[in-house]
Image 1 (cartoon, rainbow over the protein chains, first blue to last red):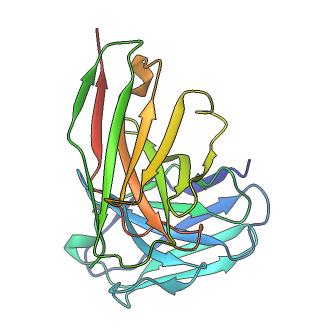
Image 2: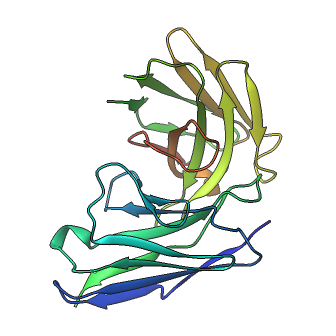
Length: 108
Length: 118
Protein backbone atom coordinates (compact mmCIF):
# COMPACT_ATOMS: atom_id res chain seq x y z
CA UNK A 1 0.00 0.00 0.00
CA UNK A 2 1.28 3.47 -0.91
CA UNK A 3 1.38 5.70 2.15
CA UNK A 4 0.75 9.40 1.53
CA UNK A 5 2.13 11.89 4.06
CA UNK A 6 1.10 15.53 4.05
CA UNK A 7 2.88 18.40 5.73
CA UNK A 8 2.37 20.48 7.67
CA UNK A 9 -0.68 19.22 9.55
CA UNK A 10 -1.81 22.82 10.04
CA UNK A 11 -0.70 25.87 8.09
CA UNK A 12 -1.51 29.42 9.24
CA UNK A 13 -1.44 32.01 6.48
CA UNK A 14 -2.83 35.53 6.11
CA UNK A 15 -5.35 36.35 3.36
CA UNK A 16 -3.61 37.52 0.22
CA UNK A 17 -0.45 35.56 0.96
CA UNK A 18 0.82 32.40 -0.72
CA UNK A 19 0.26 28.95 0.76
CA UNK A 20 2.39 25.93 -0.06
CA UNK A 21 1.20 22.45 0.94
CA UNK A 22 3.30 19.30 0.57
CA UNK A 23 2.46 15.67 -0.09
CA UNK A 24 4.96 12.82 -0.10
CA UNK A 25 4.41 9.27 -1.34
CA UNK A 26 6.14 6.22 0.16
CA UNK A 27 7.01 5.08 -3.36
CA UNK A 28 6.85 6.67 -6.78
CA UNK A 29 3.34 7.40 -8.04
CA UNK A 30 4.58 9.08 -11.24
CA UNK A 31 2.20 12.01 -11.78
CA UNK A 32 -0.87 10.06 -10.72
CA UNK A 33 -1.90 12.37 -7.94
CA UNK A 34 -4.98 14.45 -7.16
CA UNK A 35 -5.72 17.23 -4.67
CA UNK A 36 -9.06 17.86 -2.97
CA UNK A 37 -10.46 20.69 -0.86
CA UNK A 38 -12.90 19.99 1.95
CA UNK A 39 -14.84 22.77 3.63
CA UNK A 40 -16.36 22.11 7.09
CA UNK A 41 -19.43 19.91 6.85
CA UNK A 42 -19.07 19.46 3.10
CA UNK A 43 -17.91 16.78 0.72
CA UNK A 44 -14.43 16.99 -0.77
CA UNK A 45 -14.08 18.85 -4.08
CA UNK A 46 -11.57 17.93 -6.77
CA UNK A 47 -9.01 20.68 -7.37
CA UNK A 48 -6.14 19.11 -9.29
CA UNK A 49 -5.53 15.81 -11.09
CA UNK A 50 -2.52 14.33 -12.86
CA UNK A 51 -0.43 16.37 -10.40
CA UNK A 52 -0.89 19.70 -12.17
CA UNK A 53 -4.14 19.84 -14.19
CA UNK A 54 -6.84 22.02 -12.68
CA UNK A 55 -10.31 20.53 -12.58
CA UNK A 56 -13.19 22.31 -14.30
CA UNK A 57 -14.06 25.61 -12.64
CA UNK A 58 -11.05 25.72 -10.32
CA UNK A 59 -9.47 29.21 -10.12
CA UNK A 60 -6.02 29.78 -11.56
CA UNK A 61 -4.62 30.69 -8.12
CA UNK A 62 -4.55 26.93 -7.41
CA UNK A 63 -1.60 25.12 -8.95
CA UNK A 64 -0.04 21.70 -8.50
CA UNK A 65 3.44 20.45 -9.20
CA UNK A 66 5.72 17.49 -8.63
CA UNK A 67 6.23 13.92 -9.73
CA UNK A 68 7.50 10.67 -8.31
CA UNK A 69 7.27 11.00 -4.55
CA UNK A 70 7.15 14.76 -3.91
CA UNK A 71 4.20 16.98 -4.71
CA UNK A 72 3.13 20.52 -3.92
CA UNK A 73 -0.16 22.40 -3.97
CA UNK A 74 0.27 26.16 -4.14
CA UNK A 75 -2.45 28.74 -3.60
CA UNK A 76 -1.00 31.98 -4.90
CA UNK A 77 -3.13 34.59 -3.11
CA UNK A 78 -5.38 33.24 -0.40
CA UNK A 79 -9.02 34.19 -0.42
CA UNK A 80 -11.33 33.78 2.58
CA UNK A 81 -13.05 30.82 0.92
CA UNK A 82 -9.75 28.92 0.60
CA UNK A 83 -9.41 28.19 4.31
CA UNK A 84 -10.24 24.50 4.47
CA UNK A 85 -8.65 21.06 4.71
CA UNK A 86 -6.70 19.79 1.71
CA UNK A 87 -6.06 16.14 0.86
CA UNK A 88 -3.81 14.50 -1.68
CA UNK A 89 -4.69 11.12 -3.23
CA UNK A 90 -2.61 8.73 -5.32
CA UNK A 91 -4.06 6.53 -8.03
CA UNK A 92 -0.89 4.98 -9.43
CA UNK A 93 -0.93 1.78 -7.38
CA UNK A 94 -4.34 0.58 -6.33
CA UNK A 95 -6.24 -1.00 -4.74
CA UNK A 96 -6.35 0.69 -2.45
CA UNK A 97 -6.57 4.31 -3.48
CA UNK A 98 -4.84 6.14 -0.64
CA UNK A 99 -5.17 9.65 0.73
CA UNK A 100 -2.90 11.79 2.83
CA UNK A 101 -4.07 12.67 6.33
CA UNK A 102 -4.84 16.23 5.29
CA UNK A 103 -3.47 19.74 5.82
CA UNK A 104 -5.68 22.25 7.59
CA UNK A 105 -5.22 25.73 6.14
CA UNK A 106 -6.25 28.31 8.71
CA UNK A 107 -6.36 32.08 8.86
CA UNK A 108 -3.39 33.70 10.55
CA UNK B 1 -24.56 18.90 -14.32
CA UNK B 2 -23.74 15.55 -12.76
CA UNK B 3 -25.09 15.15 -9.23
CA UNK B 4 -24.85 12.36 -6.70
CA UNK B 5 -27.56 12.32 -4.05
CA UNK B 6 -27.20 10.02 -1.08
CA UNK B 7 -29.76 8.65 1.36
CA UNK B 8 -30.23 10.12 4.80
CA UNK B 9 -28.51 9.64 8.14
CA UNK B 10 -28.74 6.30 9.93
CA UNK B 11 -28.43 5.19 13.54
CA UNK B 12 -27.59 1.53 14.06
CA UNK B 13 -26.76 -0.76 16.95
CA UNK B 14 -23.49 -2.70 17.11
CA UNK B 15 -23.66 -5.86 15.04
CA UNK B 16 -26.31 -4.48 12.68
CA UNK B 17 -26.08 -3.82 8.94
CA UNK B 18 -26.52 -0.48 7.18
CA UNK B 19 -27.31 0.08 3.51
CA UNK B 20 -26.77 3.51 1.94
CA UNK B 21 -27.85 4.57 -1.52
CA UNK B 22 -26.31 6.97 -4.03
CA UNK B 23 -28.32 8.15 -7.03
CA UNK B 24 -26.60 9.59 -10.09
CA UNK B 25 -28.36 12.22 -12.14
CA UNK B 26 -27.36 14.40 -15.08
CA UNK B 27 -24.96 11.83 -16.53
CA UNK B 28 -26.01 10.34 -19.82
CA UNK B 29 -23.45 7.56 -20.11
CA UNK B 30 -23.44 4.31 -18.18
CA UNK B 31 -19.67 3.78 -18.40
CA UNK B 32 -18.67 5.22 -15.05
CA UNK B 33 -17.57 3.89 -11.68
CA UNK B 34 -18.90 4.75 -8.25
CA UNK B 35 -16.44 4.79 -5.38
CA UNK B 36 -17.24 4.78 -1.67
CA UNK B 37 -15.13 6.60 0.92
CA UNK B 38 -15.31 6.58 4.73
CA UNK B 39 -14.53 9.59 6.90
CA UNK B 40 -14.60 9.05 10.66
CA UNK B 41 -15.25 12.11 12.85
CA UNK B 42 -12.32 14.50 12.64
CA UNK B 43 -10.35 12.04 10.52
CA UNK B 44 -9.19 11.70 6.95
CA UNK B 45 -10.54 9.89 3.92
CA UNK B 46 -10.40 6.12 3.47
CA UNK B 47 -11.29 4.38 0.22
CA UNK B 48 -13.65 1.43 0.68
CA UNK B 49 -14.32 0.12 -2.80
CA UNK B 50 -15.93 0.63 -6.16
CA UNK B 51 -18.62 -0.68 -8.45
CA UNK B 52 -18.87 -0.49 -12.24
CA UNK B 53 -22.62 -0.30 -12.87
CA UNK B 54 -22.30 -1.36 -16.51
CA UNK B 55 -21.11 -4.86 -15.68
CA UNK B 56 -21.34 -5.08 -11.88
CA UNK B 57 -17.59 -5.33 -11.37
CA UNK B 58 -16.56 -4.60 -7.79
CA UNK B 59 -13.21 -4.01 -6.08
CA UNK B 60 -12.95 -3.71 -2.30
CA UNK B 61 -10.28 -2.40 0.01
CA UNK B 62 -8.72 -5.16 2.07
CA UNK B 63 -9.67 -3.39 5.30
CA UNK B 64 -13.37 -3.72 4.51
CA UNK B 65 -13.31 -7.01 2.59
CA UNK B 66 -15.90 -9.41 3.96
CA UNK B 67 -18.00 -6.69 5.58
CA UNK B 68 -18.78 -4.39 2.65
CA UNK B 69 -20.96 -5.08 -0.37
CA UNK B 70 -21.35 -2.52 -3.15
CA UNK B 71 -24.03 -3.03 -5.76
CA UNK B 72 -25.54 -1.09 -8.64
CA UNK B 73 -28.95 -0.79 -10.22
CA UNK B 74 -28.64 0.83 -13.65
CA UNK B 75 -32.30 1.68 -13.58
CA UNK B 76 -32.65 4.01 -11.74
CA UNK B 77 -28.88 4.77 -11.75
CA UNK B 78 -28.46 4.02 -8.09
CA UNK B 79 -25.64 2.30 -6.27
CA UNK B 80 -25.71 0.89 -2.77
CA UNK B 81 -23.09 0.36 -0.10
CA UNK B 82 -23.90 -2.19 2.59
CA UNK B 83 -21.67 -2.50 5.66
CA UNK B 84 -22.30 -5.35 8.07
CA UNK B 85 -21.23 -6.31 11.60
CA UNK B 86 -21.18 -2.65 12.56
CA UNK B 87 -19.02 -1.51 15.46
CA UNK B 88 -18.51 1.87 17.08
CA UNK B 89 -15.45 2.53 14.91
CA UNK B 90 -17.73 2.50 11.85
CA UNK B 91 -19.36 5.73 13.01
CA UNK B 92 -18.49 8.00 10.11
CA UNK B 93 -19.69 9.96 7.14
CA UNK B 94 -19.79 7.79 4.04
CA UNK B 95 -19.38 9.43 0.64
CA UNK B 96 -19.99 8.14 -2.84
CA UNK B 97 -18.08 9.68 -5.74
CA UNK B 98 -18.11 9.23 -9.48
CA UNK B 99 -15.18 8.56 -11.77
CA UNK B 100 -14.91 7.78 -15.45
CA UNK B 101 -11.18 7.11 -15.23
CA UNK B 102 -10.83 4.93 -12.10
CA UNK B 103 -8.39 7.60 -10.96
CA UNK B 104 -9.62 10.83 -9.38
CA UNK B 105 -13.07 11.26 -7.85
CA UNK B 106 -15.40 13.93 -9.18
CA UNK B 107 -18.10 14.78 -8.22
CA UNK B 108 -18.94 13.56 -4.73
CA UNK B 109 -22.24 12.94 -3.03
CA UNK B 110 -23.22 15.04 -0.03
CA UNK B 111 -22.33 12.30 2.44
CA UNK B 112 -24.35 10.09 4.78
CA UNK B 113 -23.70 10.03 8.51
CA UNK B 114 -23.88 6.58 10.08
CA UNK B 115 -23.86 6.47 13.86
CA UNK B 116 -23.24 3.14 15.58
CA UNK B 117 -24.34 3.20 19.20
CA UNK B 118 -25.97 0.90 21.67
